Image (cartoon, rainbow, N blue to C red; front, side):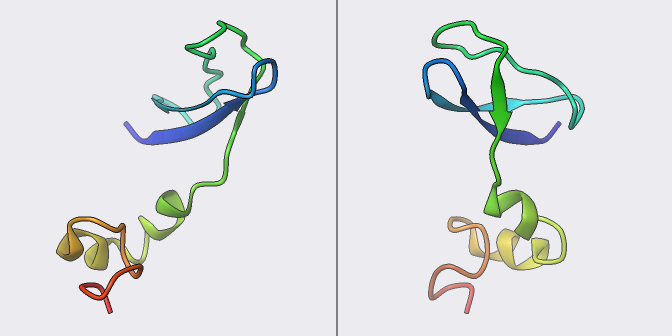
Length: 69
């Protein structure tokens, strides 16, 4: 299951959650509101074509440190 980043529209708490599906609505762990928005995650984007670089690095997620370059 992929990890997605969210932000609560009620209390502005940012959090990560494992989700079974991309469309799954996740409640805020701080206030319980279901008014949460999925955030853009650079890791999720780089996890596709850059996955081989990310696994060899072991820390930055691919392309963000001297090990990956």
